[in-house]
Amino acid sequence: TAKIARYFQKKGMKVGVICADTFRPGAYDQLATLCAQINIPCFGDPKAADAKKIVKEGLVAVKDQEVIIVDTQGRHALEPDLIQEIIDLNVITKATHRWLVIDAALGQQASEQARRFHEAIGIDGVIITKMDGTAKGGGALSAVAETKSGIVFIGAGETIENLERFDANGFISRLLGMGDLQALAEKVQEAQMAEEVDMEAMMKGHFTLRDMYKQLEALNKMGPLKQIMNMLPMGNMQLPEGVYDVTSTKMVRYRILMDSMTPKELDDPGLINSSRMQRIARGAGGTPEEVRELLKYYKMMHKTLKGLRGAGGGKLNMQRLMKRFSGMQ
Image (cartoon, rainbow, N blue to C red):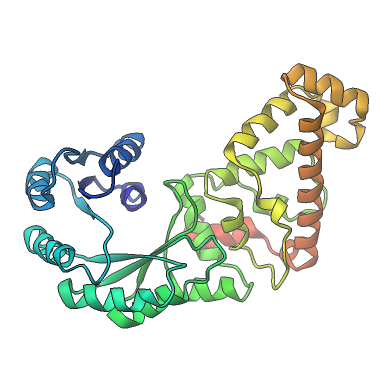
């Protein structure tokens, strides 16, 4: 729900959220915390058990917002009381859209759930979550067929920014290893970083530690590195999993380590020997092992980007293409 709210907020709309999940412990606290991070009003009552009462009061509390999102509790198709609750909430809200959230790993159960909910309130869109995992979403896709609706969004990551508008052509293109430049251009535009992200530089075979951090920091604002890489046209090239294994916490540590390096070391990592590792680690309040990990990751990125160039990525002027797709010229 917070991801959807963030999506519309980035489009310049005023968004309000109502937490009608009275079942899951901490549901309101979690949603309110996430909404507070992005300055979106969230109405709810963690002590109340009547979802209908909460929604009625919430509609009044957030009535000035352009988009109102009602978060209901998770349920199974064979729970008649909860099915009745969702019917009642649909009547109370007069909802413009009724979206069903399906886990990509749900499997065949998804079809039955979708059918029952569609019969109850008329589902007009499906959101597939956890598409960054190993599941390919077959069950969720069958749910889409059952409701005769369509996929609205795909969730591919844990942070509040990791929600992507679904586009069938782009999705299929990515499955075939052909990338999705349109989606990539949208991410760049939303992050307002067209000049900061030089995708052409990422395709070059030689780059420094300084370059690596600049690119990773920029891409981190756009979402998981794995998701971004999947938008690039790489054919059937398989990237090592370690390339994606950089959390925001690790990036902070990497930056501290690099702040302890000399300009020459940043421009030529080959200069960093054992004694320099000791000095860098001491200056950063870390260990030589952390420096080795940073250098190992740098080498992996270096090798990967050379491979991308060989796969055809280096032949593309990515910056120009993205500007063209996003209307920035």
